[in-house]
Length: 161
Image (cartoon, rainbow, N blue to C red; front, side, top):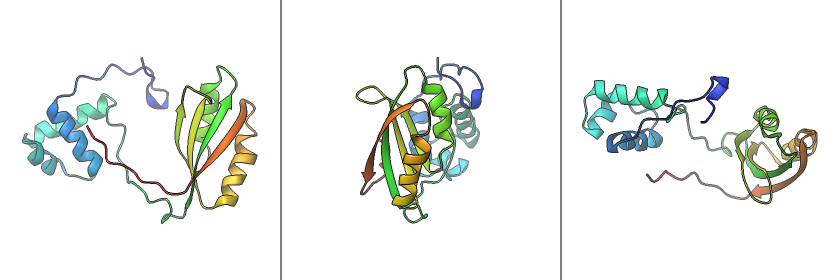
């Protein structure tokens, strides 16, 4: 079982999603500010039904939150990089907690392959990125090595359900 966010304990398995749930997810991913009324109209259910379905998706952990998609460059964080980390075996949870505290960290993944962790960061400039890698990341005792892959251009894709 997956652990809940913020240490809330184990999550119950999510209930199966039907076609209407999937349509709602597509809509909210495209526009997280969509009103209940517009969601209900587009998926052809009552407002009460749409409201109940969205609440269930949130309660089940299918929807983890609502937010804005940010153009990092226009927001003053024009340097992006993927950083791969090799870590001491069995230290993932400790390392993850320290990575969550890094300024500009936007995605953390435990992966299999030639490295253990993949980290996406957005920083104002290369100097800040260098400082983050050389001072902050490499100071974590459980981090054995890092490799930085500078992003030249990026694009968020719309999910295809």
